[in-house]
Amino acid sequence: MSQYVITCCSTVDVSEEKLKALDVPYVPFHYFLDAVEFEDDLYTSLSPSSFYRALLEGAEPKTAQVNTDEFTAFFKRFLDAGIDVLHLSFSTGLSGSCQSARVAAEDLKAAYPERRIEVVDTLAASSGYGLLVSMAAEMRLDGDSLDTVKAFVEENKLKIHHWFFSTDLSFYVKGGRLSRMSGWFGTVLKICPLLNMDKDGHLTARYKLRGKKRVIEAMVDKFKECVENGENYGGKCYISHSDCYEDARAVADAVEQFVPALKGKVEIFNIGPTIGCHTGPGTVALFFVGSERID
Image (cartoon, rainbow, N blue to C red; front, side, top):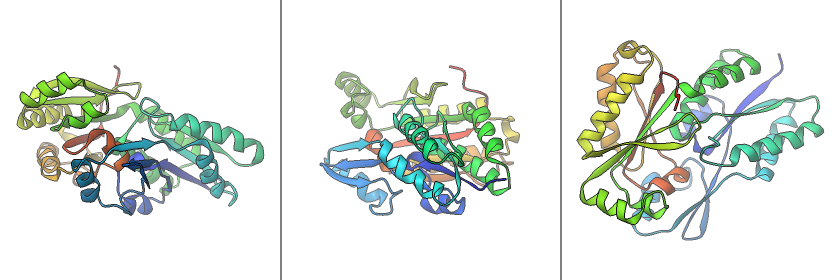
């Protein structure tokens, strides 16, 4: 069996330490604060608190996906070393980075006919993307082949549930995801929208709830409704948050109480700067394996 590596983008929203432990190299997106460019290096060069403080102080955020030339240079590192590549990509419903990776892969196949380079659209984002990548990486570490892991990802990617809520709508308005009027009414009425990822990898607003307590309860109810094997769930559960750890911890406590058989405790991560530029502070997201996303 040929040697291969699993790679991903920095939008997996897990810690750099976790990716190193799983032996998963990543390629960074880029973001800008007041036109100053940064690499999304999983908060190695700029801490989460510094990043979100800059947003709250009025810094203008902008993001840039990984382009074809960057993917080409990234993949060549492994191909030159005689290593095949299975790249698990950020959802095409949110970014064109998967297409850039595919173009780079096709160009490289001619130069490296003896090597394999496969690109899979995970239809996942943030720590849901990270959860799927970690499951695949553990299979590779256990000795499964590239074909086996690729097939697993394709067959199971729509079983990764993503549920998000936000207590601060101002960045959704700034990014054009909400009108100013809707954002104003939402703030006045303390509306916390609950969103999830649909089968095409797009974020979709599902419910509008008043108050943080109610939206947390609704998120946990969705977990109970959709999670694989109900209270006997033995898989992974990830939560990510943007500068609101206590809210993330409240969700984690409720999940752990419902699922005593959980594989380890809920793992809590920071929402990375690429996605954080669009959500701003105050967002909590819950990820787990459940029934297939069909809408």
